[in-house]
Length: 459
Ligand code: ATP
Ligand code: MG
Image (tube, rainbow, N blue to C red):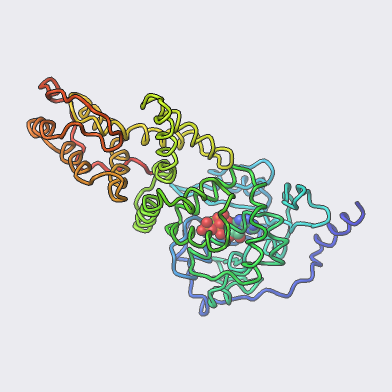
């Protein structure tokens, strides 16, 4: 108790012995305030004018230094959340354990956090593996820098002076293309095992090689990820899969031994010969869409990643005599349930995933009113994209996919002709005999034109 008190007193008086940070001027780093979000700059200047220290920190500064457009902006300040809240009309305090403030302007949200204290290894509340459970003390700038994960993430940009304050040689590491952990890597992974996934993701995204001292312990410490709450893992997996570098990230995860038995999803992606082509195609597609700034849907991606699991489970059930349709739904639930134990898929995403899967056998029905109804389905476009991916991976013939594309874009008479053309039995998924009904004219006008419909998947 006394030791804790002393530590606190010393911290307050700033006696933590750290070398002075490097002040990197504009001529060296080249980032002008005009390149940054004006909302983030304004947030800093309002805080500074009111007597607080405030900087743009983290990913944004790092990304600008390597020439990537920042995804979002974080501000670190000496002001308490309540002080920040009082200065910005459109702001709200979020978080229970560690409060941060969202400052909003137009469509932008800037995340403002108060400088945090570094973990005190002797008094911090941890689980039995050393994972820090509580982390809610405010600290000073020096401490805030040292509790960040990698040196390249501990850069503080002051938009007023256009200087970078670099406590841990992050700028030099970035130039040398090295991702270096602040502090002792094993201790930092024990505090928060998610840092292992962050190392792989940031290394792949920024083209940095993980410093050997941070790389080596990963293989042996990988199992610590099992203690991380499912919701946190899910967030991190989303970041990884939608980084625009998912293929590289996942290859790297495999190389670092960060997959086996860790997350069922990763086993599915990395250890499944059956669906491998399909899964990697889906990932490459997603990477391309992210890089082109197109919308991407977690539901769609998770549906692809788990499809071959569903197929295997579905087939097994059918072999045991279960009727096809209920067997598919049972298979879907089984697969999603297995995943959810480790990965907290949100209900909305799980719903999207199911919609896409459930639609697949409906593509087999190319007679009567069924195709007309299918192309009206709100998720038709996602379902068709999924169908196309299955064809690209060799699971089903491509002309089947083309038929649907033609049907969706055709006028009424053409549609009738296409229905007459559709071969029977026409089940690429289920080899089942089916009687083909003659196309009826009652469907006239039932179909909308899907032409140019973009997937409504911008989550
Ligand atoms: P990106 O936004 O590209 O995913 P980022 O580094 O900005 O990367 P965020 O999750 O936005 O990632 O975190 C912002 C900053 O907070 C990081 O740059 C880092 O300084 C710090 N940080 C995030 N996660 C951790 C962690 N697990 N341990 C220590 N510091 C972290
Ligand atoms: Mg960020």
